[in-house]
Amino acid sequence: MKNADILTGITTTGTPHLGNYVGAIRPAIESSREENKTSYYFLADYHAIIKCQEPKRIEQSALEVAATWIAMGLDTNKSIFYRQTDIPEIPELTWILTCVTAKGLMNRAHAYKAAVAENEADNNDPDKDITMGLFSYPILMAADILMFNAKKVPVGRDQIQHIEMTRDIAGRFNHLFGEHFILPEAVVDEKSAVLSGLDGRKMSKSYNNTIPLFESEKNLRKLIMKITTNSLAPEEPKDPENCTLFAIYKAFATLDEIKAMEKRYKAGIAWGVMKQELFEYLNEVLREPRDTYNRLIKSPADLDAILKQGALRAREYSVLFLEKLRRAVGINRLC
Ligand code: TRP
Image (cartoon, rainbow, N blue to C red; front, side, top):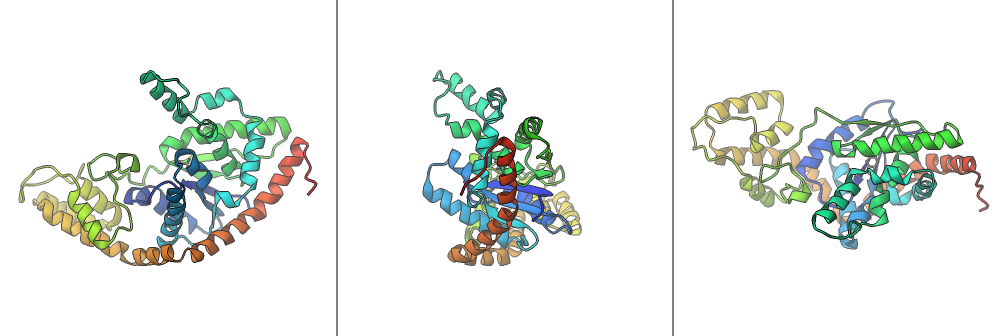
């Protein structure tokens, strides 16, 4: 097996929504179709247990995320799709990397610093509720990436610092033990849309304003009807820019359809009509994948088989590479 040209992970704590799809899943699926590129996609379930201590939620989310990627068209023959927890070499590498990572580097991580700042603002002990998992999060992420010597790592803006830390850690290891790691690069897709949610803020599970991708037809309609608009009356010309409804439509429609809709905005389409049209459009796009998704969720054994095959392929690389890294630090396995 070849090292990763492209690698990315998805933390399994939530239910995939339209914003996840447009911002991360769709671009990843597109690049998984590129010829002659080895892409690795994985469910970051060890990352998920840092933030979420509800076993049912973790299990359900892993299922939902895997089913979403497959239902939306990930080609699991071309790409390697697996769960982080099925690759035991990743936590082993995490420890090896932990031993060369400066504590000072981890002190600078945004997520950790934000947690400390919040405690201080509330006059609490600065360490309140901060686990070693949260503190060491970037090292586990570095291990995910370095385990497969990934070259490019597509991520959201908030993750760039983690890739920089990965490069630091890799550089330190290389300096001490020889050139084993490629320094990965973050790829931030400027083209992919960031969708707003029901209340107009960025669609995100932390704002509780999401439209899950595979809601039932009835709920999908209900949610779209809830999207906030301004109070312009029917027939008053409307601005498609800064309109949540239009932005969602645009993320799915063809160029010609987008242009036609822009005209209807200028001509004063009523919000109720636009909501109904957006619902019908999305419902059509999602109908088939939704059926596939529901079928997969009901028969986890099919998903397990796909993920297992992915893990076996990934381990063709990780087992041998970890062996080499262990030897580099002076440890040989006896059994
Ligand atoms: N931390 C990433 C996030 O929250 C998920 C992730 C875990 C990841 N390991 C990774 C992304 C490795 C890219 C590469 O979005």
